[in-house]
Length: 119
Image 1 (cartoon, rainbow, N blue to C red):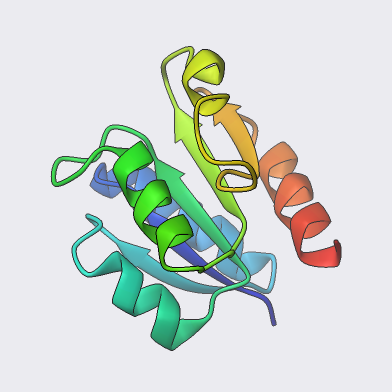
Image 2: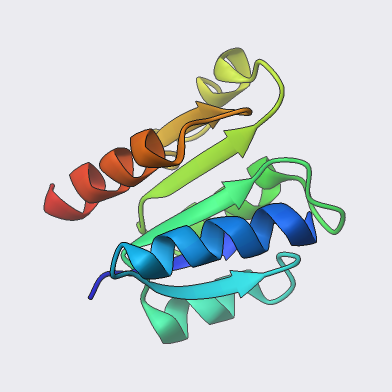
């Protein structure tokens, strides 16, 4: 089963998405924030990271940059309610794999995740 780390601070959204991912045969590590993210990715080796952009502890770009700086090239899908494409283009090449906007279709998100795993 593919493994995803889901970082979402909204409890309801996190639970609903986790339930859908488990139903789609994913192993899910669901987190409320990004504390210890680099170490967690290094130890768990997820296939994909789903990162909600408005994190309280660090913004999503700081997390992506930290992972990239450590050579952890796990595909990252950034989820945001904001128009952030112009900011994503400023990230190091290969640091972010995809951006999906809220509200989003869970089936579309699953398709994008599977494409990244298959690549």
